[in-house]
Amino acid sequence: MASGRLDSRSSSTNDPDRVGLQPEIVGTRGRMTAASAIRLAAKDNVATMVSAAEDGQAVTINTGTDRLLINAAEKIPFGFKIAIAEISAGEQIYKYGASIGQATADIAVGTLVHVHNLAGLRAGGDTGRTG
Image (cartoon, rainbow, N blue to C red; front, side):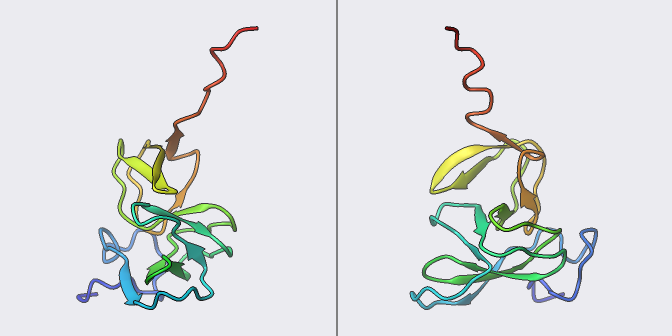
C-alpha cells in the first residue's frame, strides 16, 4: 500500500501495511450525506458510529465539510466511538471538541474507543461524595 490509503480488502488488525496510516479525505462538499460515522467537531480524534461496522469494513466518516474513509480494525457497534487518528497512550481523547478522557493504551485508526482503552474524566467522580 504505497499510497498510504487504508485498504478495505484487508481485515487483519495485525497487517503491517495498515499501521500508522492516517484517514484519507475523499470529498470536500459541505453538504451532509449518509455516513457510517460522524465527527462532531474539527478537533475530535474519534467519531460516533451511526451504523455498526464489521472488522475490516470501510467506514465513511462525515465531518460536515469532508468525508474521511477508514477501515474498522474490529467490530464496532452503533453509537460507539471509532478512532479516526492514531492516539498514543496518555493522549487526550476528544469528542464534541473537548477532552472526554485519556487513552490508557495506544489506539490505532479504526479501533473501538471505549472503557477498555479510555479513562473518562468523570469516572468515579461521585465516589468521594458523602451524605
